[in-house]
Amino acid sequence: MPPKSQLWLLATLVVAGIVSAFSGRIDPYFLDVAMGVGIAVTLAASLNLINGFTGQFSLGHAGFMAVGAYSSAVITTNFGPKLLPLVGGQVWILFPIALVVGGLLAALAGLAVGAPSLRLKGDYLAIVTLGFGEIIKVIFQNVDAVGGARGLVGIPNYTNLFWTFGVAAVTVYVVWALLNSTYGRGFLAVADDEVAAEAMGLNPTRYKITAFVVGSFFAGVAGGLYAHLKGYLNPGGFDFNKSIEIVVMVILGGMGRHVGVILAAILLTVVQEPLRQLGDWRMILYSLLLIVLMITRPQGLFVWPLWKKKNA
Amino acid sequence: MAPLLQLDNVTIRFGGLTAVGEVSATVNEHELVGLIGPNGAGKTTVFNMVTGVYQPTSGNIAFGGKPTAGLKPFELTERGIARTFQNIRLFPSLTVFDNVRVAFHLHLEHDAVHSLSRGPKFHREEIGLRERTRELLSIFNLERVQNEPAKSLPYGDQRRLEIIRALATQPKLLLLDEPAAGMNPAEKIELMKLIQFIQEKFQLAILLVEHDMKVVMGICQRIHVLEYGRKIAEGTPAEIRANPAVIAAYLGQEHA
Image 1 (cartoon, chains in turn orange, brown):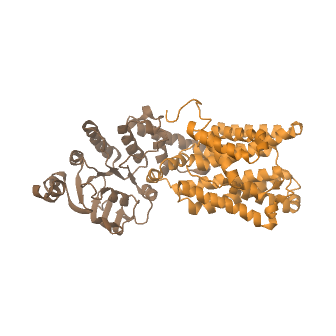
Image 2: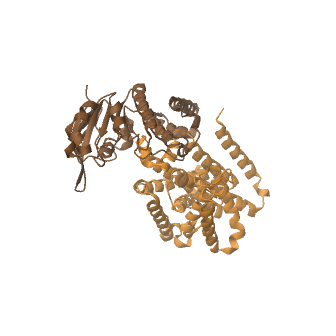
Image 3: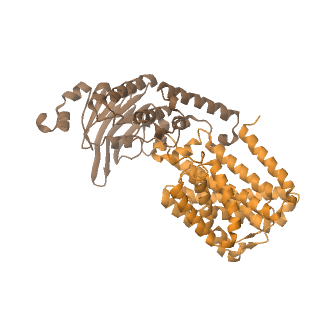
């Protein structure tokens, strides 16, 4: 009998599959929001591993997402017609392969950014990752093969409820399972005190790179889901604001909290809908929310028990 | 028998300042050695070189007969050197239990992938480690607070927890950096007993940096004395107490 955590994962996948099978009866608008929620949970949970549990500060999550989005979209859009016959025309085989390849390339980008820059701490790391995110955006804006600034169009709409919630469940499971072990407590130890962690025989650089690579992998997969949900990629969509949006989810949920961050990702995605007519003004609201929150509830919105004060 | 730890003409300079100059010293297996000296004598710097935080400018350090040059702190911990810090450095947000558990990490056979698979092997190993963590905590009577966050412990317990955490790495050599700092006389006596108990129970060598003469003289078998980064004396507590150079260093020239 597999452990309870894996049964939970399996149950979530089965439920996602069943609901997805009947998604034709669900209101398309509602469906769209629900899939957005799944993607947001994946992004927030993966960033939580880096920013929350391992105590790093990455502002480049949208960049990793873009790497995954573009690479999986190129696979299905440009090479799809050739690749599909190879897997017997089955989209459910091609799509996850494209997602995983996108994730792996994002992880590779995570390694490339992380390995040299993880010696930096706090704000310095934030600036490097911020720079990386912008570089990625500008690269995609200028490569004509993927549409340049006009964006990449004609991406098949492969994303459905099963994939979004399945990936979200797997991400949450991986982050949870990675942390809940003697090995995994090392991430928290590194976040708490690197010098002490090193004196206890933990290799902080390795932990940080692991967090970065795993986190960017899932950001890449989420990017792939996003690409095949919207059917269109605009490089401007993976800008600094997008990274901040994910950071806000993590902070709002409580850095290094599993459930809190999931709830915050759901809340912020749903709340966006009525705020949509505000357009870019939404970011002001986000920023205001952050300021108010940092003053009144620095430990996060959904930290149990809800009325508990920090350090109490 | 070769000494467990050997410092051979070790020098470290920070810019123009020679913090530690040509210090040679040894610690034998199962020996309790003190390292004393006035403020700024370079004791903690010696510690930081032994644990790999700093690399000596010249001279050699060998542990278990092998040179340690170029090794990172976590690699030295793997080889069997554990330490505590002058200003306590626990993992404040982790529980008491997890502070100790994470230090067992070195002796894990399986890591990331097994964390994800959560198969029977993983569970067997985790259960074993939990058992060993509980055992270690119960030796020092800290199992009653094992689920409290480490930062909520009283000061004396935090010091003890730091020592326990270091022991969980199963060291051959334990370096204690001013463990008696901030303790009252009664706590100091308890600490002396604790250090001797640890040395016997875990059969390890201890190098103790300490300001408190009563503690050092009371338990150390051998003492090295530093002043201005140089070693000025070495010997048993009785010899050190009678050494004119040591008395001069601590009390001034006219008393010698």
